[in-house]
Length: 396
Picture 1 (tube, rainbow, N blue to C red):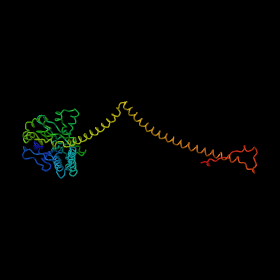
Picture 2 (cartoon, rainbow, N blue to C red; picture 1 turned 90 degrees about the vertical axis):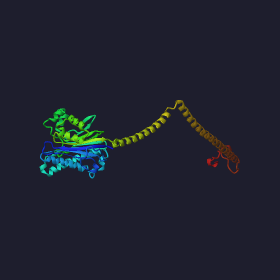
Picture 3 (cartoon, rainbow, N blue to C red; picture 1 turned 90 degrees about the horizontal axis):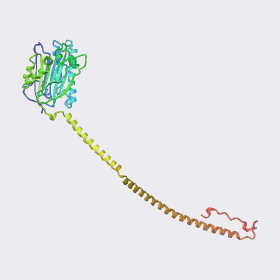
Picture 4 (spheres, helix red, strand yellow; picture 1 turned 180 degrees about the vertical axis):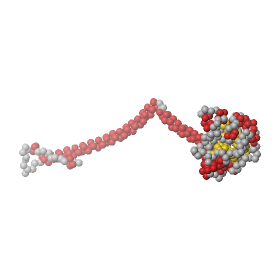
């Protein structure tokens, strides 16, 4: 199981009032927003994770303090088990989306308070949230409150990027990081909670954590007066005790800090979505390989038939022709035999008809040769009489 240590606190410094605010929840499922009494105690990470938040109010008088308080209370409400849906922690994209939703809700609540209470007009707040779940920490922020990662053998890394005017100048290569810290407009914020001129546009990133890594959240009271190198030196020196580390970091000014140190990381629950993706990918690969194999077999069979030697093809064709010829010859012989029989029958019939016709002709001639004395002899004599016509149907 993933385990961690946690500590947080704030220091007013030389100010009369503290516009910073913070809150931590070691286990979201228990909904207990409290700093652990024993900062050296190793805490097992719950299924819903651990949350830290820092907010730095703006607006002067009591307005800044009100804005940061609204931001913190909104975060606590949104992460309560009754409010946060189970689907919010199922996938990395869902976690990021919900973290953005939390920040947008905080922005709306600050703006709503400004409308309801004219005395708070113009108030606002920065915000930075760290949500540790499984083996990753999700960082969401607006403004110039920062999130850092410190790894003993790698040093310090800034996880967030300031939404400030001087940061834009640094990005444009018009200022160095050192020049930005001392710039007269270093306090100009480009995005913040409660800005009525624009909708909230929080940034969210996912960062995989490792053993002994420390996640640090702070207001600009620290990063505005200490370089990243100076912060890294303090954390490196005091990493064995988070309380001492916090006290050394907050000595100089009005600073709010939350520190979370990773004791162990359980990689078996790390990136569950990726594991599912790989599993589904292997299923697809196996299906794809099966399909390719089937196609290959069919193609091979086709190639085998196409690659048959010409002589074998000719023999096969010749054999086929012979079979056909043999069948045809058999049919022809049957036809010929049949024709022969028909011709024989026809010849016999014709001969019989001729004999009958001949007999009738002879009979007719003999009858004509008997002369009736009472019948006058036609002119031209007996030899000049014509034979009697014979109808075809009479002999049929």
